[in-house]
Image (tube, rainbow, N blue to C red; front, side, top):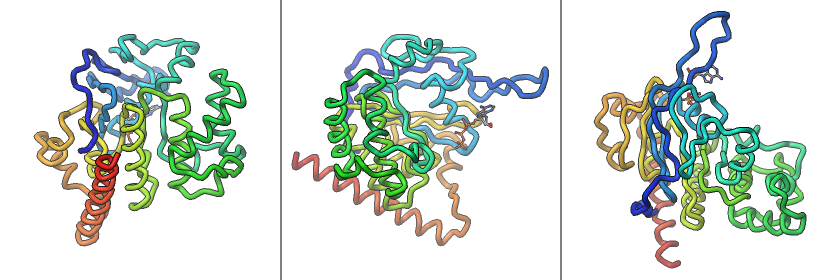
Length: 295
Ligand SMILES: Nc1ncnc2c1ncn2[C@@H]1O[C@H](COP(=O)(O)OP(=O)(O)OP(=O)(O)O)[C@@H](O)[C@H]1O
């Protein structure tokens, strides 16, 4: 892994302590549904915690609880030393400068009626930035995510999935956040686009020191992007540790099964797909490391 983390810092940027999330039942008098039980994670500055687990294990709920979008039934979400689990709407607005999100689907997460320039200027305007400064910042953001400056006057439908995800990343970066919750941000993209967008996430982290809570069902993706990995199963974290250890030599039987599992039913195709993905990700990693060496 080419990204280094300052492990000398005293307290983490984010810590989630004994978190429980229950969703109220829609049926009258039925018990609430417990989606998360006793979750404990930390994320340091400039660090990526990968969150893996099968569908329904609670990954999105954990990301949403950090963002204040899922109900915190018990426990705490502590950001920069402050308990934000019961933050008011006003406090959330202030927090949104530091805490951002990139969603899975680049086709639904961008307003189709707005030009890219307006999509990127929106969070800047909400935080009171003047038009001229916002315009300059929008150009910087497009450059940072590798999009041409003439994208400003174009609509989302004029871009591919990977390019749209770059717009979503630029929007999340607009206010220079400290932590971005990335909820399956590459799983809607084809393999080679996935690798390029993952590379962009790594480069941005190197340049800005931003931290990521990176949700994915894909162990290969998580291994590539994360410093540490937490594995979720039925609303609990069953294993967490350094990415290399958890993804190559897992201790928990569920993680071992996850490692063997693949969404591709044909074993030959599965093997080929794994090999392709390893090759692409290794290639991207080499390129990132070479770029770092030159810089
Ligand atoms: N708003 C909600 N109300 C009630 N139950 C919910 C709500 N959101 C999620 N759940 C339930 O909580 C559990 C965890 O869901 P969550 O979306 O967090 O899992 P996930 O691991 O992110 O799954 P996926 O990979 O499919 O997105 C699931 O059983 C889901 O049905």
